[in-house]
Figure 1 (tube, helix red, strand yellow):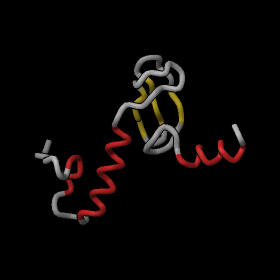
Figure 2: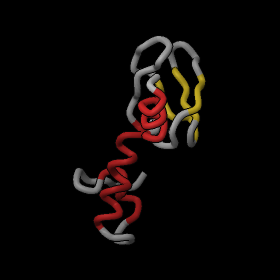
Figure 3: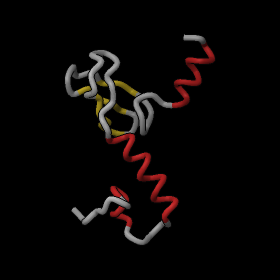
Figure 4: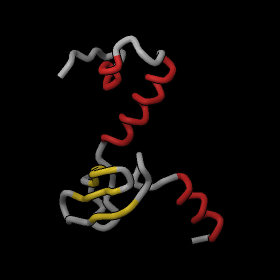
Length: 85
């Protein structure tokens, strides 16, 4: 892999292209999507992103649909608040 510094993180692969603001936004999104999330079934931090919108728990094997970058999308949160669930 290419060399990455603390400042640019995972966006070091873009080099001087796209500007700092765009890279900063991408870096924050990738940081959130690549971390482990809590599984709704076994309640452990083992939920990982397999593909866009597909999340898999490494412990219990649960496979679920969710947001593209986070297991719980903001649209889902708004819908649940509106319905009162």
